Image 1 (cartoon, helix red, strand yellow):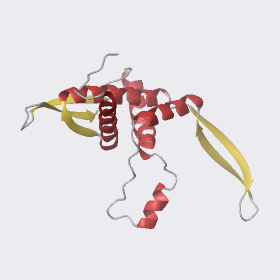
Image 2 (tube, rainbow, N blue to C red; image 1 turned 135 degrees about the vertical axis):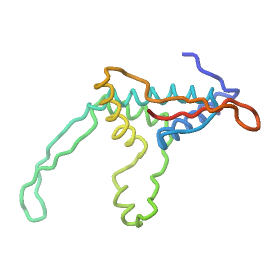
Image 3 (cartoon, rainbow, N blue to C red; image 1 turned 45 degrees about the vertical axis):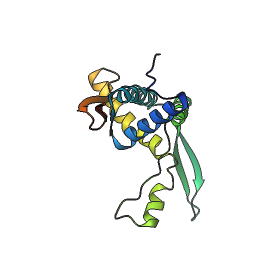
Image 4 (cartoon, rainbow, N blue to C red; image 1 turned 180 degrees about the horizontal axis):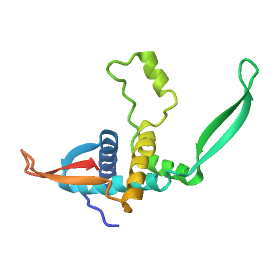
Length: 169
């Protein structure tokens, strides 16, 4: 598939697009030039579609064990299926891994407790928030794609480049 060169060498162009896609998926919207926005839209829609297609591929297992008091208990674990795991790895190859941010009124021990099981917060957000939201939308409206929107903002002050806002719908 043909893509825009954006007047950059390949490695710099890929790094730029990866960082902008990461910022879009993490924050929900970004402002950039129109040409970059169209490329970011193409990549972000593909990643979200990959997550939506595999959102239901999970394996539930029940393990029997004993608690501290000696009572038998059952522990239910939910693991990714093969397709979802492959999709997760493909997404991790494209997006950067931004660190989880501590909330203003959150203490350090509460932050550690909240984030102890989260290794890749952006990938978790894609699968736990966006994939569920958009798979429900796809089911209700019987359509796929169209997860992002590009709105032109006009020329940028200084160099006159056409600016655009990319946001998740």
